Structure formats: C-alpha cells, structure tokens
Image (cartoon, rainbow, N blue to C red):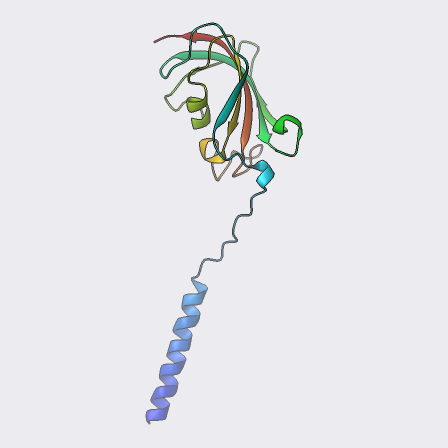
Length: 153
C-alpha cells in the first residue's frame, strides 16, 4: 500500500511540474541590431539660428525629415519614414506631449532660423511597439529639424 501511495505521489508531482513548465515564459528574447540603436538623446546644430530661443510652452513652426537611425549608413540615415506634411510646415507646442519625448526634450534651447539634428533612442521615440508599418519596435530615430518660427507664450 505504501508503494502505491509513493507511486501516486510521484506521478502527481510529475504532473504538477509539467504544468508549471507549460506556464513558463515562451517569448523569444529581443535581439537588437546595434546599428539601429541610439544610446542617449543627442543633438548637433549644423546651423545655429539667431532668433528667439525655444522653451517649453512655446508654439513652434518647423520643417523636418525623419529617418530610421542606422549607424552603417552615411550620416546614420536609414530609411526615411516621414517629412513635413505640407510646405506650410508643422506647428507644435513644445513640452506638452504633443510630439515624441525626444522632440519635447531635444528642441529646447534651439534658436529660430537654426537646424538641429536629433538622434533619439527608442524609449524617447515610439518605444518597444514602434509605429507600424514605417517604424519598427525598438527603432532609434534621426531627425533634421529646421525651426522656422517661435511664438512665446
């Protein structure tokens, strides 16, 4: 009788352990191409403007072009995914979450009439999910932004 009980207990443990294994995380780890990653928000100003300085709360008028970041390409410009929607430019209020966080942080201090190149890590861009179909998850971004006008609040 004791051996039957031991056999049943052993089988019950085996079933329980098998069930626990089925609940384990089966997601594959994300493998990121280092060429597509930006370590931290950075910017350069190939053209320093001479007008008003952009600050949080200001209304800005900009023109821009956006590329997927790719360190293996000239100027780190991978596939272009976006550009200013109209010749009239793009209007935004800086610092209120109307645009990606990389812009809200990266355009502060830019001067009217200037051009800024923003390198944006995925967590300050479109995150883990991306913005399909043009921007994959975990995508580093590169923007060239020209600040046309600053309207102070």
